[in-house]
Length: 296
Image 1 (cartoon, rainbow, N blue to C red):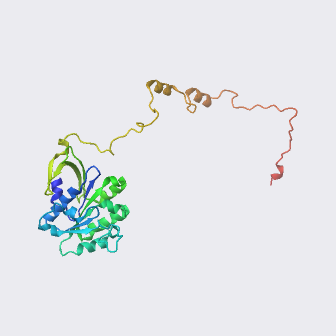
Image 2: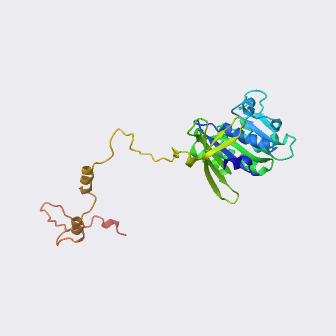
Image 3: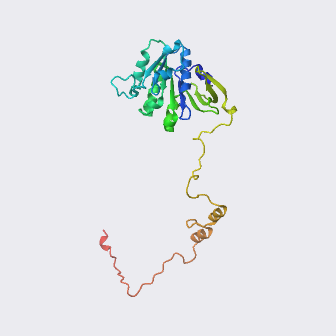
């Protein structure tokens, strides 16, 4: 599936490359940028985390002229007098203006490096709203974004990935130059296709699929999906031995009614429940009603 995604993102498509501190997805993002440039598409990059020189490293040929880098790396928060691009400009109007400044007639591909930088300064609902508007606005043909999943809560990652038509989660492979790509692609009809492949990236920013992950050794379970034992690290023991469990089962609890108690309550013996009182000679008993003045 990875080569198919590299061949082209559908109009209105939204691709997210999800990485973590264990493996960076920026090289794979550059592979997608290189593939878009080779298709003669105009590419606009919002660069928050690396400089223009570092992003263009490895991109060669005349097609690099169609790459427009909007420098948000130097002054992302607008602390200087003339910032090139700031995180506060991440809105539909500003992004549409940036894309339409170029002379290309066709809608461009927008690359966000990275979405994590924007999510640090905008609320997830605001970011999702802007992305949805860009997809339907017409000025942008497709969107590609890098997302550092371990920087955000699972709800935030899930909200942004829910908008994406394709999500690629990259993790380290068995060898140093290999990585594992877990892919999810949603079609317009609602069909969801998932795949997992082992790949490597060559110097010319081309992706080589080595094998399916299932053929490359045992599959590593997601740490978040692994069942954890809540009693593993306690300073006291919550488990019972067989003898203790047997004694617990035989213990009669005070609030549990046995058959004997139920029988005694439901079938009372003669004379039970009666109150017998014999007046004492010294009792002060008045025959008059003390509350007769309350009668109306």
